[in-house]
Amino acid sequence: MDERYYREIEDKVTYLDKKKEYDVVWLEYYRQSKIFQGLRKEIVKVIHTHDRFGSRNKIYQKVGRVPEFYYLTQKGERAALSRADIVIAVQDDEKEYFNALLKGTNTKSVTIGNLVEMKDSPYVKDKTVGFFGAVNYTNEFAVKWFIQRILPLVREKEPETCFIIAGGICKKVSDSDDYVKLGFVETLEEFYDKVKIVVGPL
Image (cartoon, rainbow, N blue to C red; front, side, top):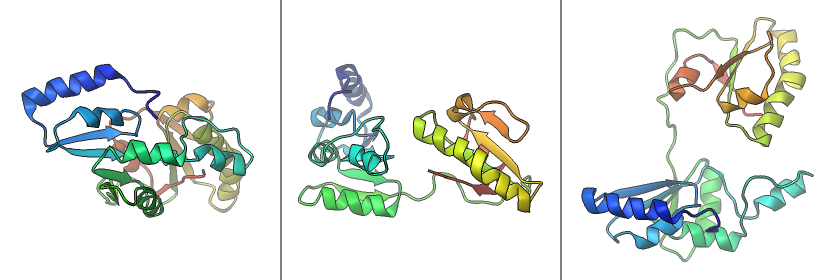
């Protein structure tokens, strides 16, 4: 669970805390959670999980896929996450998974809802669909599958449908008149203001 841990980050956070006396230290993913062991007890320690990693390899294998990215045993995931006070889950079912995994520890899992203000954009047509993703095999497979298999079916019913792709995943998608590639965007709103419907064909 600490294979990707960088001691230099711990030293930097400890140094900064001595100057700033932080109330909260928030980590993205579990991989640097060892940092928490050297911090003051008063600091609220938070891990934003993004994904579950316990037995992730078995989830891939169950659907006939080769495991990719990182994965842990559930024991390892429990150990890494229990270093935090709060574990942020993306979805309610993952929150329940983490709370069950962390039963008997002092760590609680919660969801935080939307990171972007929910509003209707005056610039969006009803037939604008979007996909936002980083570069990884799962996103690449998903967006290409959507373009090849689903988008033609949508356009049979709604020929004016516009499909917008944003994020690093644009590097893995060839140029085409069938869709618009925004590439990297400065803010999430820059993407969400342009689309009416978001797809996650994972």
